[in-house]
Image 1 (cartoon, rainbow, N blue to C red):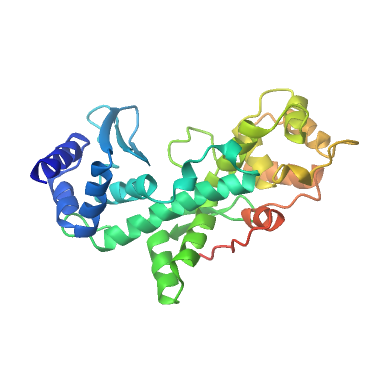
Image 2: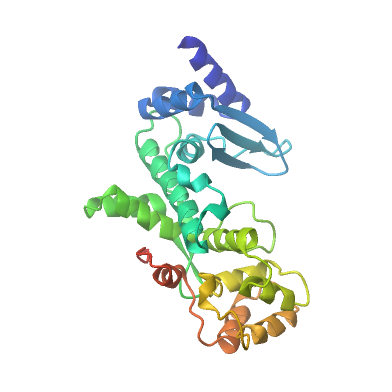
Length: 304
């Protein structure tokens, strides 16, 4: 046991953990139990030299990305490790390939529930943290379901509210999954404003839709490759989720939108894009809640 503990602490320090954070990992029983279980089943922690600070987790591998000095990896913390352990150890369906899901909503839901488990794990372990810097809040910007506006939500405070109201674990995870669908991933690059939910649904369409499908026909009508704004708009208004929502033949109801998007010269004007979609596809409905309802899901709208 001592050699495993020494190896884990060595890996944490190599990954950029300060001594007090590494010791907090060691001294917090629930965290140490998860981390030793991760290692005993072949897992490892890696340091990756990169142009940015980030952390990722998957079964068997957690990585901390380090920018060039003098910058530091701000993700080398107890809380980030707790989050990535949630990805590595919990809810395996999040790692199934897109093609194994029947529709975009089912795939996105699995990914969003994976993030929900990671956030819930982070909340629980941070509450149990012994030593190191306190981690009592996690504020994320959440996109409104009905438009492109945003609002800050403290995820830890939201979980505590749900617990105080008597919600069970499944209800809390469902709430976190809906919040995650409207949350913004880190490391998206300049000018890319897609949410997790929009990314997930776009990825499923890209991976599964055959030639001649409504999605491929629409892409072919664009005078250029779809940019991040196009992708965000199409996913926000649920235009291909589920794919059966659009007719397979006859007049294409999205042809006016394709033509209009081709004429948009300025990137990043989200209110103008929203108005454009409303004008050219008046029957479209925005939001994750609408997508869930059309796909037969029951995810409630998250409340701030």
